[in-house]
Length: 105
Image (cartoon, rainbow, N blue to C red):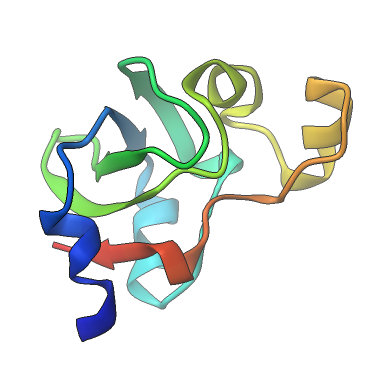
């Protein structure tokens, strides 16, 4: 976990993703963040940008590097990973924030 601490201290987050309780439970078990668990997107950011992951009470839970831009996440949020290619019109990753690119706060 120590090697991922740079994600927190390196740069200011460019945006936030609000997740549901199911996604929060999955993250607690070491899973990646998937589109299905995302409720809202705040801010404008690009693929690879540092973002905050917050719960429904707006409490920060984790930080990570986004695999998608904010506009892409707005199109796929709440949908199953199998629908991402169809929704975006191109092949993409299934994880919005991969577990290897995330650190819990």
